[in-house]
Amino acid sequence: MSKENETYLELLERRIELFNSLSATLLAARSAVAAFDIGGLESRIAQQQVLCAAIQKLMEQTERLQSQCTAHLRLHGGGETIANSPELEATLQRLHQAQEAVKQLNDAHQALMKRSRRTVTALLNSLHTFEGNYRKAAIQQTARSEQNDKV
View: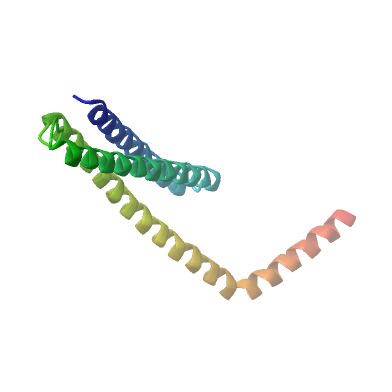
């Protein structure tokens, strides 16, 4: 197998690893939402941004390598190719599976965020609706507590 082919497979393997890591951070973010752990959620979002940037960089490297290989094959009339390699087919299948897993988790995470936003909005609306009633009671309670403290 040529050096370019080995490099191409290594890049694909690295992308698979990054997609698997992204899946793990999406699952961790879901757990953070369920636990009302805002700090944990923010941390997972930051990790997701780093992973997405790394995936994008690898995609660019892969595309450059593909272009180089295509140009090389045109100049040299074919030669050794990885196109029919069982190893490549297996790697591409695993990459597709990792991408699908991320897509499904991302869709579920997006739905969770929408539901959470609706819940928070409903709670805020509820709070605003009863704000006058609770404010009066809180002021009265505070006044009584201050009077009791003076005595």
